[in-house]
Length: 215
Image 1 (cartoon, one colour):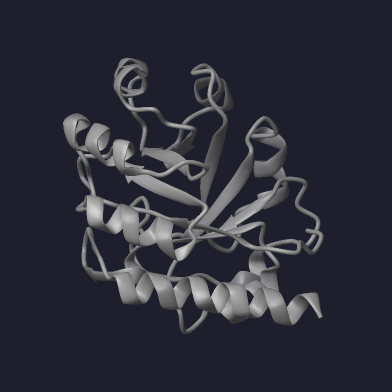
Image 2 (cartoon, rainbow, N blue to C red):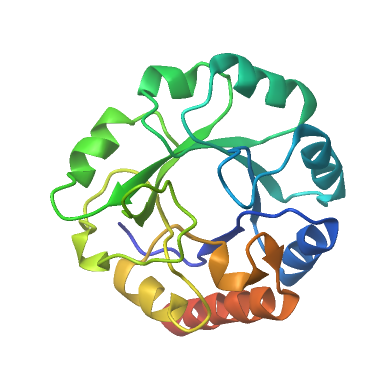
Protein backbone atom coordinates (compact mmCIF):
# COMPACT_ATOMS: atom_id res chain seq x y z
CA UNK A 1 0.00 0.00 0.00
CA UNK A 2 1.60 3.23 -1.15
CA UNK A 3 1.21 6.35 0.97
CA UNK A 4 -1.44 8.82 -0.16
CA UNK A 5 -1.74 12.49 0.54
CA UNK A 6 -5.24 12.35 2.03
CA UNK A 7 -7.11 9.57 3.77
CA UNK A 8 -10.70 9.39 2.60
CA UNK A 9 -13.42 9.15 5.24
CA UNK A 10 -16.68 7.21 5.22
CA UNK A 11 -19.32 7.65 7.92
CA UNK A 12 -21.55 4.56 7.91
CA UNK A 13 -24.87 3.55 9.43
CA UNK A 14 -26.68 6.86 8.99
CA UNK A 15 -30.38 6.90 9.81
CA UNK A 16 -31.24 10.60 10.25
CA UNK A 17 -31.13 13.60 7.92
CA UNK A 18 -29.36 15.76 10.51
CA UNK A 19 -26.60 13.16 10.79
CA UNK A 20 -26.17 13.06 7.01
CA UNK A 21 -25.77 16.83 6.98
CA UNK A 22 -23.43 16.83 9.99
CA UNK A 23 -21.15 14.26 8.34
CA UNK A 24 -21.12 16.06 5.01
CA UNK A 25 -20.47 19.45 6.58
CA UNK A 26 -17.62 18.04 8.65
CA UNK A 27 -15.93 16.80 5.49
CA UNK A 28 -16.89 13.15 5.02
CA UNK A 29 -16.19 11.81 1.54
CA UNK A 30 -18.77 9.00 1.68
CA UNK A 31 -21.91 8.19 3.63
CA UNK A 32 -23.16 4.64 4.23
CA UNK A 33 -26.76 3.43 4.35
CA UNK A 34 -27.37 -0.05 5.76
CA UNK A 35 -29.84 -2.28 3.91
CA UNK A 36 -29.63 -5.21 6.32
CA UNK A 37 -32.66 -5.80 8.51
CA UNK A 38 -30.73 -7.41 11.37
CA UNK A 39 -28.67 -4.27 11.88
CA UNK A 40 -29.78 -1.64 14.40
CA UNK A 41 -28.75 0.89 11.73
CA UNK A 42 -31.02 -0.58 9.06
CA UNK A 43 -32.94 1.87 6.89
CA UNK A 44 -36.10 1.12 4.94
CA UNK A 45 -36.51 2.14 1.31
CA UNK A 46 -38.58 5.27 1.88
CA UNK A 47 -36.21 6.37 4.64
CA UNK A 48 -33.18 5.73 2.39
CA UNK A 49 -34.74 7.76 -0.43
CA UNK A 50 -35.18 10.73 1.89
CA UNK A 51 -31.66 10.43 3.30
CA UNK A 52 -30.15 10.23 -0.18
CA UNK A 53 -32.00 13.42 -1.14
CA UNK A 54 -30.30 15.15 1.77
CA UNK A 55 -26.77 14.31 0.57
CA UNK A 56 -25.05 17.35 -0.97
CA UNK A 57 -23.12 17.21 -4.27
CA UNK A 58 -19.78 15.41 -4.52
CA UNK A 59 -20.41 13.14 -1.54
CA UNK A 60 -20.55 9.41 -2.35
CA UNK A 61 -23.57 7.39 -1.22
CA UNK A 62 -22.73 3.78 -0.34
CA UNK A 63 -25.30 1.03 0.16
CA UNK A 64 -24.35 -1.79 2.53
CA UNK A 65 -25.81 -5.27 1.97
CA UNK A 66 -25.33 -8.66 3.64
CA UNK A 67 -26.10 -11.72 1.49
CA UNK A 68 -29.02 -9.97 -0.25
CA UNK A 69 -31.17 -11.38 -3.02
CA UNK A 70 -30.59 -10.06 -6.51
CA UNK A 71 -34.15 -8.75 -6.56
CA UNK A 72 -33.68 -6.78 -3.35
CA UNK A 73 -30.51 -5.07 -4.57
CA UNK A 74 -32.24 -4.20 -7.83
CA UNK A 75 -35.26 -2.85 -5.96
CA UNK A 76 -33.04 -0.62 -3.82
CA UNK A 77 -31.16 0.61 -6.88
CA UNK A 78 -34.43 1.44 -8.65
CA UNK A 79 -35.33 3.86 -5.85
CA UNK A 80 -32.13 5.00 -4.13
CA UNK A 81 -29.29 6.68 -6.10
CA UNK A 82 -26.42 4.63 -4.71
CA UNK A 83 -22.96 5.35 -6.10
CA UNK A 84 -21.22 2.30 -4.63
CA UNK A 85 -22.38 -1.08 -3.30
CA UNK A 86 -20.73 -2.60 -0.22
CA UNK A 87 -21.12 -6.33 0.34
CA UNK A 88 -20.56 -7.74 3.84
CA UNK A 89 -21.58 -11.36 3.44
CA UNK A 90 -20.41 -14.35 1.46
CA UNK A 91 -21.26 -12.82 -1.91
CA UNK A 92 -19.26 -14.15 -4.86
CA UNK A 93 -17.40 -11.84 -7.25
CA UNK A 94 -19.96 -12.74 -9.91
CA UNK A 95 -22.79 -11.65 -7.64
CA UNK A 96 -21.09 -8.36 -6.76
CA UNK A 97 -20.39 -7.33 -10.34
CA UNK A 98 -23.83 -7.90 -11.87
CA UNK A 99 -25.46 -4.63 -10.82
CA UNK A 100 -23.49 -2.19 -12.95
CA UNK A 101 -22.17 -0.29 -9.92
CA UNK A 102 -18.69 -0.07 -8.40
CA UNK A 103 -18.47 -2.24 -5.31
CA UNK A 104 -16.46 -2.78 -2.15
CA UNK A 105 -16.02 -6.22 -0.60
CA UNK A 106 -15.86 -6.40 3.15
CA UNK A 107 -13.54 -8.97 4.68
CA UNK A 108 -13.72 -9.85 8.37
CA UNK A 109 -10.09 -10.14 9.37
CA UNK A 110 -8.63 -12.69 11.74
CA UNK A 111 -5.51 -14.83 11.83
CA UNK A 112 -5.53 -17.27 8.91
CA UNK A 113 -7.52 -15.10 6.51
CA UNK A 114 -5.41 -14.67 3.35
CA UNK A 115 -6.02 -11.07 2.31
CA UNK A 116 -3.80 -11.40 -0.76
CA UNK A 117 -6.00 -14.25 -1.94
CA UNK A 118 -9.13 -12.21 -1.14
CA UNK A 119 -7.80 -9.31 -3.21
CA UNK A 120 -7.11 -11.65 -6.12
CA UNK A 121 -10.59 -13.19 -5.91
CA UNK A 122 -12.31 -9.80 -5.78
CA UNK A 123 -9.96 -8.10 -8.24
CA UNK A 124 -12.91 -6.26 -9.77
CA UNK A 125 -13.73 -4.48 -6.51
CA UNK A 126 -12.89 -0.83 -5.97
CA UNK A 127 -11.32 -1.84 -2.69
CA UNK A 128 -11.37 -4.21 0.28
CA UNK A 129 -13.09 -3.01 3.44
CA UNK A 130 -11.29 -4.69 6.32
CA UNK A 131 -13.36 -5.19 9.46
CA UNK A 132 -13.01 -7.15 12.67
CA UNK A 133 -14.12 -10.77 12.78
CA UNK A 134 -16.71 -11.21 15.51
CA UNK A 135 -18.53 -14.54 15.61
CA UNK A 136 -22.17 -14.28 14.60
CA UNK A 137 -22.10 -10.68 13.38
CA UNK A 138 -21.41 -9.02 10.04
CA UNK A 139 -19.91 -5.73 11.19
CA UNK A 140 -20.79 -2.64 13.16
CA UNK A 141 -19.55 -4.24 16.36
CA UNK A 142 -17.20 -1.52 17.52
CA UNK A 143 -14.44 -4.14 17.79
CA UNK A 144 -11.01 -3.61 16.25
CA UNK A 145 -8.55 -6.20 14.96
CA UNK A 146 -4.79 -6.59 14.80
CA UNK A 147 -3.73 -4.20 12.04
CA UNK A 148 -0.46 -6.12 11.72
CA UNK A 149 -2.47 -8.82 9.89
CA UNK A 150 -2.80 -6.49 6.89
CA UNK A 151 -0.04 -7.17 4.34
CA UNK A 152 1.79 -4.21 2.89
CA UNK A 153 1.49 -5.39 -0.70
CA UNK A 154 -2.27 -5.65 -1.14
CA UNK A 155 -3.09 -4.81 -4.76
CA UNK A 156 -6.46 -3.19 -3.90
CA UNK A 157 -7.12 -0.01 -1.93
CA UNK A 158 -7.77 -0.68 1.75
CA UNK A 159 -10.74 0.83 3.55
CA UNK A 160 -9.95 0.29 7.23
CA UNK A 161 -12.90 -0.34 9.53
CA UNK A 162 -13.60 -1.97 12.87
CA UNK A 163 -13.53 -0.16 16.20
CA UNK A 164 -12.17 3.12 14.92
CA UNK A 165 -12.81 6.35 16.83
CA UNK A 166 -11.16 9.72 17.37
CA UNK A 167 -8.82 8.23 19.96
CA UNK A 168 -7.22 5.59 17.73
CA UNK A 169 -7.73 6.59 14.09
CA UNK A 170 -4.45 8.52 13.89
CA UNK A 171 -2.48 5.48 15.07
CA UNK A 172 -4.38 3.31 12.60
CA UNK A 173 -3.52 5.60 9.69
CA UNK A 174 0.13 5.78 10.72
CA UNK A 175 0.42 1.98 10.84
CA UNK A 176 -1.77 0.86 7.96
CA UNK A 177 -1.71 3.88 5.60
CA UNK A 178 -5.14 2.92 4.25
CA UNK A 179 -6.82 4.57 1.30
CA UNK A 180 -9.82 5.32 3.53
CA UNK A 181 -11.20 4.83 7.02
CA UNK A 182 -14.76 3.79 7.80
CA UNK A 183 -16.49 4.56 11.09
CA UNK A 184 -19.94 3.85 12.48
CA UNK A 185 -20.22 3.07 16.20
CA UNK A 186 -17.18 5.24 16.98
CA UNK A 187 -19.13 8.41 16.18
CA UNK A 188 -22.46 7.46 17.76
CA UNK A 189 -24.46 8.66 20.74
CA UNK A 190 -26.31 5.34 20.50
CA UNK A 191 -26.74 2.72 17.79
CA UNK A 192 -27.95 4.42 14.64
CA UNK A 193 -27.83 7.91 16.18
CA UNK A 194 -24.69 9.85 15.32
CA UNK A 195 -23.03 12.50 17.47
CA UNK A 196 -22.04 15.56 15.42
CA UNK A 197 -19.20 16.43 17.82
CA UNK A 198 -17.76 12.91 17.58
CA UNK A 199 -17.98 13.03 13.78
CA UNK A 200 -16.13 16.35 13.72
CA UNK A 201 -13.48 15.09 16.17
CA UNK A 202 -12.92 11.93 14.12
CA UNK A 203 -12.51 13.83 10.87
CA UNK A 204 -10.25 16.37 12.56
CA UNK A 205 -7.96 13.57 13.77
CA UNK A 206 -7.76 12.11 10.26
CA UNK A 207 -6.93 15.49 8.74
CA UNK A 208 -4.32 16.24 11.39
CA UNK A 209 -2.45 12.96 10.96
CA UNK A 210 -2.55 13.34 7.18
CA UNK A 211 -0.98 16.77 7.55
CA UNK A 212 1.73 15.38 9.82
CA UNK A 213 2.51 12.51 7.45
CA UNK A 214 2.73 14.83 4.44
CA UNK A 215 5.50 16.93 6.00
